[in-house]
Length: 104
Image (cartoon, rainbow, N blue to C red):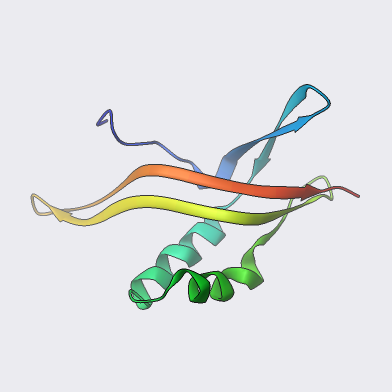
């Protein structure tokens, strides 16, 4: 793997919950949200940030298995895809995601 590329598993994305000097890992499946974002970007290549944010708003709430909900408030993924040497490829360059965890 190219050293500048990032391996990301959106089906088991790890967030770090920091509270009172402790850190806990929260795992969330963001694969559906990530696919929707990339599809919207392809279908609307000239969409501005505000339009994109509005379109993704209905999907930013991710239910976690323990009854808590993760609200994504920032999702930015730089990637490249296309055809290289006759083969389809998809490479992630960087990921910047944050959210708020609401617990029951």
